[in-house]
Image (cartoon, rainbow, N blue to C red; front, top):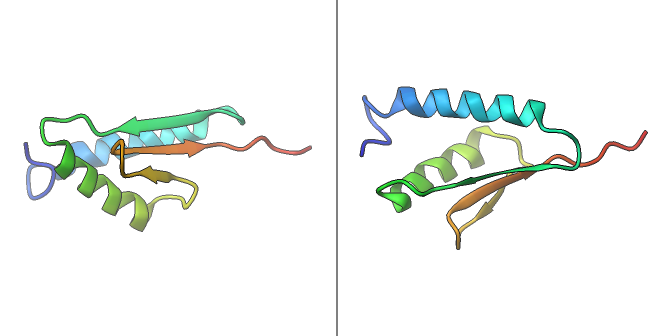
Length: 78
């Protein structure tokens, strides 16, 4: 149940590192969606929302209604 504090930090850090790897590997034109579905989804959404707005790329979109985040990797024009 801990998403913050002493015990919740390491799993969150591991998760965000994995998400960053997925974004790098994402082919142009595809998207990645994350949805908060933990036992305490409201708390999970608040924690992740704070993280994404402060530290991650501005291309991440936040959907308050569905407690989700999505990233679209645009097609590159060559």
